[in-house]
Image 1 (cartoon, rainbow, N blue to C red):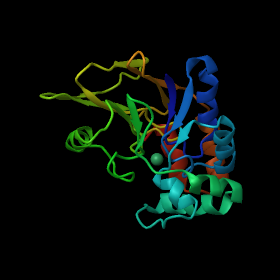
Image 2: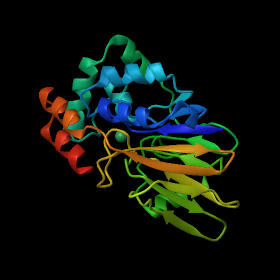
Image 3: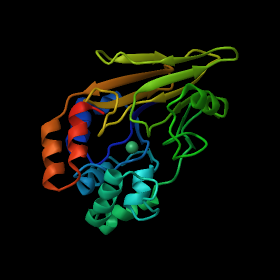
Length: 247
Ligand code: ZN
């Protein structure tokens, strides 16, 4: 089975549209969303509408989806994130708010090879930035591969009985990660709508559980248009700036 894996769309319509234009329907069998459909960006309703039209086979919630749908307080958020979440809550149509509130938490097992989560398999809100946290997560996996999001940084980690290593994608080209027997993998596809690895291009992945491979892609989108909408919506200026920096 081939899965299109999208994470951290963050209400960025231009980025989401560019990804869907870059992917052919023949490239995947099912689509999976790892959470944070909204938050930060200026098009929460349009992006939720597009997600609902895509009808992903499985979508799980992210921390921003919980706050922006009114399920959870924004206490843990920084000022800009909190402001954007409150603005999003106010903007969302009742149907779209209900859709976000109905998303299940991760982790979820997709097939015999793949499971997904937003933050980590143990805690949907936990950030996996450090190798020590990745090792901890890898030890607890119920499948050989876990696709995760939340950090907005494309990366892979793997663990065998005696070895651990990182896979840092070369983003000048498409990165293909072949899953070796005897190893477990945690792979982050990166963020569609707010990349933070210094590359402003939208990120996504295709997982092939028959070929045992994860392929990471980047695609250019109209960053200036997304920035302009953020400014016009009077969302914090820094949210527009960071899209240009990919930070
Ligand atoms: Zn996010």
